[in-house]
Image 1: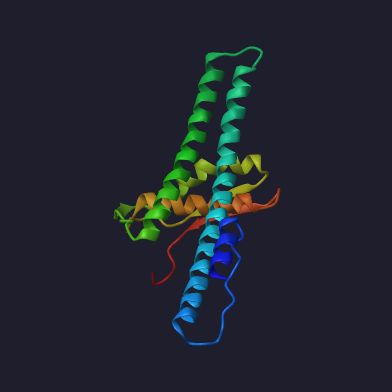
Image 2: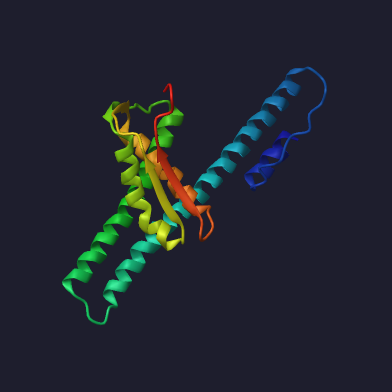
Length: 195
């Protein structure tokens, strides 16, 4: 039975399990451990597929924008240096989005392995929020979403600038992505009383 189940898994049937018996001998213990291992593998593969789907979805937007910007510049009937310069700036912005995504993936990997180290320094969170808003203004406009800000906190706090900026970018990106045309996204930075 163990051999048949292993063959099924080899053929891609990750839900296959060995029937367990209620005795308490070594073979029963081996069967339970084998099924637990299969369950963990099945969950890991499922999480991997889910992550790959998210990565593919997140990469599609900046890469599509990159290609569209380049094609629009190349097919312009009367191209000018200004047009090419603007197109290159747009391409660089899209490339930056792709690089940010790759760095996020690496950070998640480091965090899960316990190797992620924070680099704390005094920063103004409102300035980080403003950078993120400027980065996503065009994306929000293309999606028909109003991107608003209320940046009331202007002081320095100890934080990892890169990680906080990335977290804010992920939040804003998801808020735009899963919104509806005509919706709005509000990014607020304020100090709560007592904090």
